[in-house]
Image (cartoon, rainbow, N blue to C red; front, side):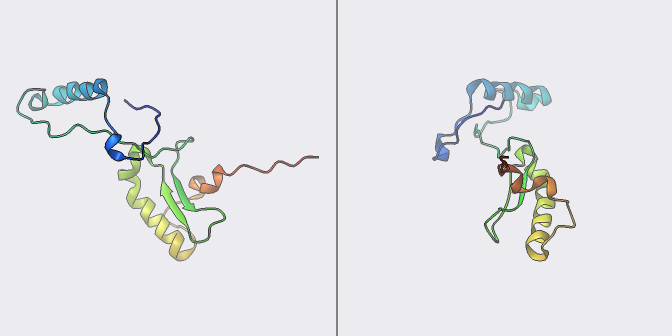
Amino acid sequence: MSKDAEVPDNPEEIVGESESIEMLHKIAGMVSSHLKKGETAEVVAEQACFLPCTEDGLPVIGEIPGVKNCYVATGHSCWGILNGPATGAALAELILEGRSTTVDLKSFSPSRFLRKKRTIV
């Protein structure tokens, strides 16, 4: 139920695909008879959103290379709500103490996206 698409400038332009919404209704109805379409539950809104994802599937957490005192914590995909507290604690330590002891942030460094300089011999 996900796809690659350009994020529009205006959030109001983000709409769910009817096939995906219908599938979610079907799944919800299987979870509970109260959630079957046309039953007790009233659908108040049908929405879609974009999740921040990275090409390698890992979040980006740390100081931006070459930009002093500029930090980022993004790219958690659907796991952001679960990993947010640990990410926040690790980032706070990094900013305040210069390193994180809560989480080893090496694998999540923004520098992993920098292109390596090639040496020509």
